[in-house]
Length: 318
Image (cartoon, rainbow, N blue to C red; front, top):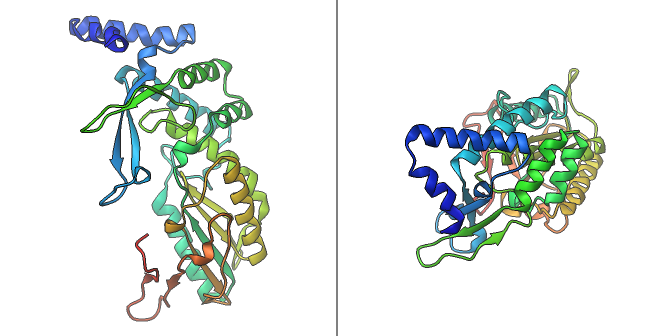
């Protein structure tokens, strides 16, 4: 194939010559601010998200990229991550995903669990809404990536290279029965690319920062409080001690996500309300276009009772 002729030539060289050619290509990209076309030409495959997947929405596209390109963009991602964290552009007390060295999912889950138990023991009010977003990587408009790069004052050379990369990115998908024609990537971030996670975190950070002013810290009593938002990549949690703030935060997030052409995934979103230390199943939350009131509440049993556990009362698997 013509698209892979240069790569095939490299593969036929002796190992030392291959390494020299590959290193020259990576140095050339930094020097000339130009991305190799081989790095933009991608074979894609679909992997199932769940058991017995049938519809296209139940599969996740994965990009099989050029190895030299992945090495190059992993270096760029490392430098970009260092730049963002050292300048305080990423709030790691809220966003735990995609940042090396930052404790993530287990830490957030433990903190939220303790907040729920504290609300029960101190007889406080607390709302917790776990939001799962649909097709987040594939829905991020590239215009938003460009806006985010400018907002965080990312060096212009990096902006130019990423613009060159995504504007020339094309891929095709193969199955057992057929192979598609080449498709230009017009929206979304390619899953499988080493630069994608930090770009996604940056895009989410814009959303989180825009929404965080909708509510104050959740009051957990005894001088303890918690930020009203927690996130691990695209899994976002709202934690508020006032119902009106919870609704305002949910509406704000919903509006911001709609602007980004992202919707909440109703099947995997859940809400829990505690009033004066007791679970209140009468409190529900509505979001457009999906209704969180249709989601089953997560029951929190008394931690001091025998057989205490976190029980999901839904009729469908999350």
